Structure formats: C-alpha cells, structure tokens
Amino acid sequence: MTRSSSTETICAIATPLGIGAVGIIRLSGPDALSIIGKIFSSHHGGPPGGGAAPTIEHAASHTVHHGWMVDPASGEPVDEVLVTVMRAPRSYTREETVEISGHGGPMVLARTLELCLTAGARLAEPGEFTKRAFLNGRLDLTQAEAVMALIHAESETARRIALRQLRGDVADSIRAIRDALLVLLAQCEASLDFVEQGVEELPAERLAGRLDAIQQDLTILLKSAQAGELLREGIQTVIAGRPNVGKSSLFNRLLRKERAIVTPFPGTTRDLLEEMLVINGFPLRLIDTAGIRTTPDPIEQEGLQRAHRSVEDADLVLLVLDGSQPLQPDDWLLIDTIQINRTIIVFNKMDLCDPIDFALVSVRLPTVPLIKLSASSGAGCDQLKEQIGRLLTERTGGMAERAMISSSRHQQALTATADSIARARIAAADGLSAECIACDLNEAIRQLGGVLGVDGAFTEELLDNIFSQFCIGK
Image (cartoon, rainbow, N blue to C red):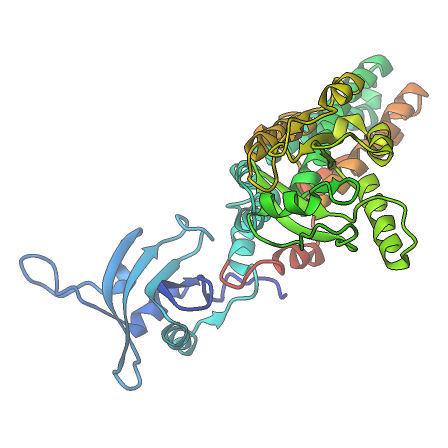
C-alpha cells in the first residue's frame, strides 16, 4: 500500500459485491465534487421563482440530490441515483466526500465506477478511506482498528467491545496512562536540564509510588486483554464424555443442524468436529470429540488422543454423562480429572428417566454447575445456554461491559510498556540517576504512542499491515 495522498481523489464500491437493492460508490478527495459534476445530471429544475439550477459542485454539505449518472462521452444514462454531498471537514475522511447510491447490480456499479475513474478519480486501496480518516486526525489508530473489528464482529459481545473502542474508550484509558508517564518524564528531564538552578530530582519514594499506580492501571488493561483474546478468537468449548452418552446429539442440538453423525454404535465420532456458535452473546468454537474409552482400534485411538488434547486446551468443557444408567468407571475417571472452574456437567437422556447418579456427583463437586437435559428433545438446553452465559460472564469478569483490549497488537505493546515501567521502578529503587529512569519512561511512552498512532510513533509498514486487512470501500 502506498501512502495516502491528500492531493488525489479516490473512489471505490462501498457495498458488498453481488445483487442487492442498493449499491454505494464512495469518492473522497479534493476533486470529488468536480468529478461528480462531470458525470451527474440532476433532476432538480431550479430554485423556486426561476433562475438557473445550482450545480452539484456548489451543493451544500449533507444534502442529497436525485438524478442520473451519465456517460459524458455519449450522453447515455447509466443509472438513476441519489448523490450525497459531505463537505470537508464534516465527513468520514475529513475530505470532500461524495456517496453515490444506485441500484445494487454488479454491472451497473462497475459501469458507474468506471465513469468515476474516467472523470479523474483513482481506485482506492484497501482501507484507504479509514487510513485517510486516521491521517487527517478524525480517528486515532485504536479507533481505526475498531472499524475493522466492528465490521467483522460475529457476536453481540464482540460488537459492543468494538463499538466502545470506536467511541474512544480504549484510547482514553491508554492516553491517561501515557499522560501520567509524560508528567513523570518531564520532572525527570527538568532535574537533568536545570540541575544548576537547584531543581532536585523527584524523591525515590514518590517516584516509585507514582510508577506503582501507573502499573496498576496498566495491569487492569492487560487483564482485560486475556478476556479480549477469548472473545476475539472464540471460546474453545469441548463436548467430552465416554461413547454413546449423547455428545454428538448435544452438538447437533446446540447448532440446530445435523452436523455430526449420530448412531447407537460406539466409536462413530473418530475425529474432532468444530463449528462456530454464539450463545448469550459469546462466540464459541464448539468441538465434538471422540468418546473417551479404551479401544484396540488404532484409528479410534488417534481420535481419543485428539479428544484428550482438546479437553486439556479447552476454555470450557461440557462433560456429558448418561443420566439414564449408573455411571461407569470411565465417567468417574473423567469427573475426577476435570478442572472445576471451566466445566459444566451435563446429565443427558432425562427423557428416559431422572439422572440416577445426579446427587452423588453434586455432593462430590458442589461448585460445578450440573444441568439435566435431553439432547434428543431439546428439553433443558435453554438452561444449559443460560449456565454457559453465566460462567463466561464470570470468566471475563464483566469486562465485556468496559473498555477491553481485544487486539494482539495492543496487548504486545502494553506488555512491553509494563516491562519498561518495571525497569524504571527498579532503577528508582536502586537509586540510579534520573537519566536512566527517563530512558525507560521514554520507551514506555513510545510503546503507548504506537498503539494510539500519535506523535509519529508509527511506521508506514505498521499502517500498511493494519489497513491492508480492510475491504477496498472502507
């Protein structure tokens, strides 16, 4: 990606390709209005009382105009459209911007785009509109990344997190930490620059106390990153249990489709099946595993090994037991090896009878949620979903309702910042000079500046990496 130039006018189709009711083409740059003036014919016949009709180039900001896109070479109408004018700086990019809303067919959009290019615009690069919004100061870098996160949000929780980041909640938290570090840095540098005037260094105890307070705020943000990673990547949720307890039936019931093969014969599922699912606003990577048992079959053994690894790596385990018969030794072995804080025990087949060993398991694991259900009829599945939502809300500490770090780039920068502050804290405790402390503070400030994209604390390579992931029209 080349560096966006404010002297060029860019254009792109801003709606998904395919047939739809409406398609939008966006132009941004200094010549957006003159370009549209060459290819747009308004239906407006002039102002009341007579006089010449105003041209689109002189239209007021945030007005909509009805008319036709016309090929200036032939005079041929191409599409009936609405043209929206947004003048700088009151636009997404803070540049002169025009949006053409026409019919959403691939051919008509391609023809309209061709008219814009012929009239003097160039095709936008991926993410170039949002990149210009960043370079022109409308968005900081965290907000620009939030645009992408909002577009790709696959759950209500992910949407809320992205929207708060777009509103600036994440940037405000990071900026507050950076401002506090800037104050400390100024005091350290003042003691170096004005030593002859008697400016003393900040006492080590006070400096350490301020660094501790800043580190505490940073720790809160980093804790949110752990929950943010779960919500970004999807919560790995493994359905485990011995053969024929109804794992695949539960898998299909939660997905509301026949994804896994269900038979009365043990060993049907020999490999992992994975599907994305949203429950109570949380994105889950739901995994159906092979029934855990002893078997001489080498293919089934491989499936069992994969099942064991999935359980060990899982963020959440749904341990399925057959509630219609006494629990087997393999069931009790699984019960005794689960991690209590990330497991829900599911007694299946309650349509056949009330779970036989429910009370025994409840006494042994009083803090583990136990759910009775029937995967075949669906009875009790709503209660399971509610319990999953409660457990995940506890796991994320309610952080989904506050500013949350959900970007791995941000997490890496904040970790590096925490390391720099820790070094500054040690330097202060060891009585090292203000110059040594200032060096670490500068590095922490630089890392946070890179997250926000301020004071030139970013590279063209970083911007290319971020904005190349956007679609062309955004």
